[in-house]
Amino acid sequence: MKSAPLTQVSIATSREAEEAVAELLLRVFGQTPSTYFDAETGETTVSTYLEKPAQWSTAARAKLRSGLAALAECGIDIGPGEISASRVRREDWAESWKRHFKPLVIGDALLIKPSWVKQKPRKGQAVVILDPGLSFGTGHHATTGFCLKQLVATRKVGLKQSFMDIGTGSGILAIAAAKLGYAPVRCFDFDPESVRVAKANAAQNEVAQLVRPVRHDLTKLPLASATRYDVVCANLIFDLLIAERDRILNRLRPDGVLVLAGILETQLARVKRAYQQAGWKLVATEVEKEWQSGAFVRRG
Image (cartoon, rainbow, N blue to C red; front, side, top):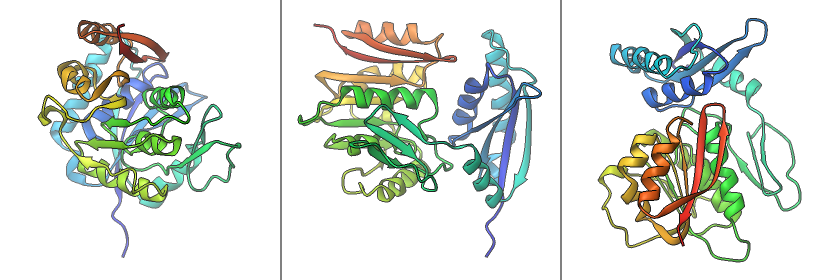
């Protein structure tokens, strides 16, 4: 039986705005966008792929238009800003991913690669096998990349360290944490499809006993938590990071490290202020294009 085609939703934009447009598509559809840059025209096309035609609704189109308008109001050059949709065969989509997806190396500690790439790890380097799919998180987005670097930087070999991943997406952070030696590892996501994909990715990486993604809505979890973790990553939209600050912090040990991502550079000051008011300070940050992520520890 032939697989149903996917709906490809694309936005023609500028190189400057590609990450912001990718984040917009992610927020509207909850699925991984891909990016293609045409060196001749200087134009970038950001696309996402929908399994159900009903997802390409009037409401979704309106959200994309208003999101692009908001980016323009913030002074971001969105280029043409043209939205288009077409049907593509799954086979074409899969081959397109294979052409553009490359391995990702995080220092000497971590190699993330798709299953079809034969690159071998360096001695002592943990390997995460992750084939691009319809759920967010391949490590190549600036926000995910920062979280991975912090996981590596924070890991103390020989010591027991626990990890929680809030908004796990593809499960990449939780899987990487397990491979690096964090235990226990806990992760959850609001989107049931992300949970399904994260479980499959954990099984592919032979860490299904250590990484068991579950569906939770952060906003509905108890404010207090009996269990606290050494490292907590929350890769979420910035207003959720602020609104749910106390729920997030109540899941972190007082001497732990909090990694926050999913934040535009223009938004970090508000996030930083909110966590400073709760007694935490920014100790590491990284800016890539318009994104800025941060790691926090409790003020001494």
